[in-house]
Length: 537
Ligand code: VG1
Ligand code: CO
Image (cartoon, rainbow, N blue to C red):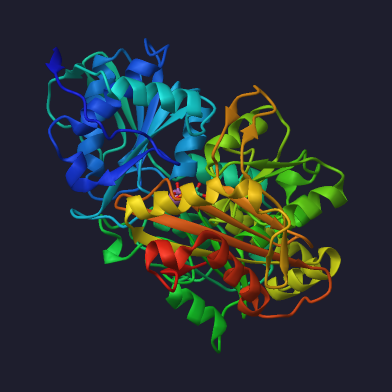
């Protein structure tokens, strides 16, 4: 039954910030997906008799790759595959299932917030037994294997029925098709006070962006929490996300934003991304930046039953604003600053050093799973609104009055030629040592470095994680290149300015000087020929 198929390596299978992401057409090359999946299997021990979780965000190619991965899992010694019905599992639900089933790991098929369809993006990510993205030493081993791979193992056979719940055999492998929502919804009920949320009389709008959270949000928000039918918009997962970017930001979730800023807005608005791990939070008339959301959730988490005992620590990625650090300081708990990407939070969560983690890119989560979790953030916000009786705007204003406000924005320059983006970063790195003391307008550089992280649990070091320019007075700009794109380079410029007393200013005004300084320092226009970012979040 098991066939050994000869293959030759592809030279572009290096996992990025969150797994291997490429155009669908790249994945459709002969043996491309098989090579990567086999490289994963060749890089992990303990497959014999083990359980593997498989699921994805439902995008184009999801079902095809799942069928192949199941037959390869059978040929590589796994005893059981747990797969979401229809091939669907949100990233946080996959993380939960891996943990619940004590699986060896899982394959999460997604390109997250990137668009889907025959000409768009696909992705494969391996998660380890703690439910989280494989750490760098594992992704490096996988990458090394992709460069030498010469065969893969597969069981020949027909496609299995992914749409019927229950068990089927593929050779010696048992494939269990499970409801993708049940276990995840049960977990949410243990963390949050569903009765209080139900009883609070709140109204809301949730935009699932035609992506994976539709069925989760419909079950949890409408069926269990009693929000009105129609609260969940775009709730059916589509292989091409209806032709949109399933990226919950002010550009791609503009309709929700306009709704929340307009007359008759509900109390609370939220959206999630392609694979369900991101969240966008907008109260009536009040957008909350993801960095602020992390800080506000951490400051109020004790109001939800799952966090009533308090937090052990708060972790954020380096480009995320320091708002969360102020909360940690007040709570007397440690604050951690990690490189971009959820894989760096896993060890801190496993070690019980942090309870809540977050990124400026609309990712927030806790130790309940090992991925960021969009609906979790939505439910924690709802729990806080229900427990306090306050509006999102009240919570935000109270927070700033207590802690001061970190004005924050990210400017993305997309589709930049890779050579140009690399030249910009190289030039920047080359002049870091000379920057301290230099003035740009009214701003003076206090320190400049290339962020390196030493994991406090295993002392592993990750270098070149983004250039930080810190100005006197606490403002800063960070430059890094995206590790999730599939064509050209995306330059991300992260801008932050803290104010203890100016709490009600417009963000662009507060950041204007830093934006000018950023271009002076890095020569963005000179290198990229762009005068404006493509996306501001
Ligand atoms: C981006 C975000 C990062 C996030 C990653 C995966 O990475 O900046 O914070 O962890 O996407 O999120 P990059 O390298 O493009 O900046 V998701 O929702 O795509 O799994
Ligand atoms: Co995502």
